[in-house]
Amino acid sequence: MNSIAVSPEVIGPLSWEGLEAHCLGYVLDNRSYGQLIYLSLVGFRTAVRGIWAALMGNRWLEVDGRSIHRAAVKYQRITTRLPEQGLDHLVLIHPQATLKFIEPGKPFYVLSDTQEPPLARFLAMLDKTTRVPLLPQWANTLWESGIETELIETIEATRGTFAWRVSAQDDTWLKVIQEGIDLGRLTG
Image (cartoon, rainbow, N blue to C red):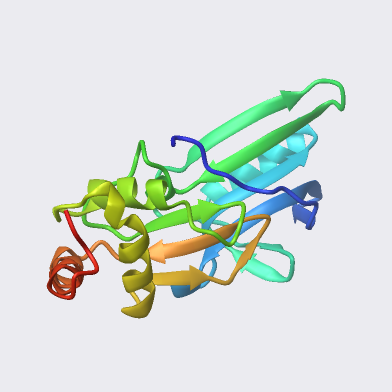
């Protein structure tokens, strides 16, 4: 449950002042004008590091015809050397898209390599960000109710993965749960 599933694809170049790497996937938050949630890129080490430094220096970059910029958070960064190709693979991920670093009370992001949401991961993240009582068997019903009530929004600005933005409002989730119990959709 600690891994995030994505399906990398070569999307196109991501460059900064002459340094160029290839983007394999991204997620940008719909609500924050291209704020970066997830980025995967591969290229020569100097290019990958230069692009990372530009993003962390609050530079706006462009990929796939979209402008991207960093959030004011400490991204989780994973770099892997691909020695046979002589390249580096960099993954940046917003802490609100990770189970390990997620903060309570803030909206979070659920990523998947298919259109099917990872329900166990969603429930674990909801449990860490809210103070509402949750049972594992409620995951699917809570997901459906979250979509219906717009507590869960599909993020459209993605490539190589599917993503959703989830509200962490305790009072609203409590209402959803109470209604589900009252209607018999949620049982213990």
